Length: 120
Image (cartoon, rainbow, N blue to C red):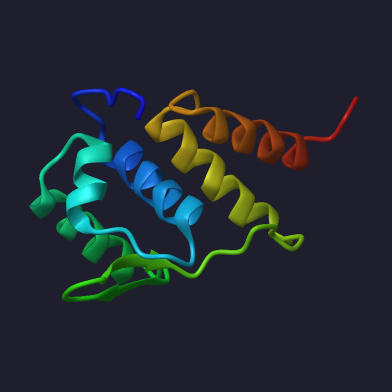
């Protein structure tokens, strides 16, 4: 297992949590294992999962032996059409959290900016 940074911002942690669940989908991961992988407490994982579910992320939780958290994730995404306003909102959100916080964030930012700006 790769070493985990001792501190992750809340947004980076949520991104990592979703990616951990997505990589394992459709099998569940226990909060204990997620906590170990993210370098946080089980309580923090449970709070982050609750926040993501509240925001509409399709994370399912099953309690008890063999349970855990899982996400309904696709291996490949269909094309997504955004309005210019929606794309601008995502650019603003990425700029606020730091578009270089991960390779995925950096790639998403570049794609959004290209889609918003006319080529000259």
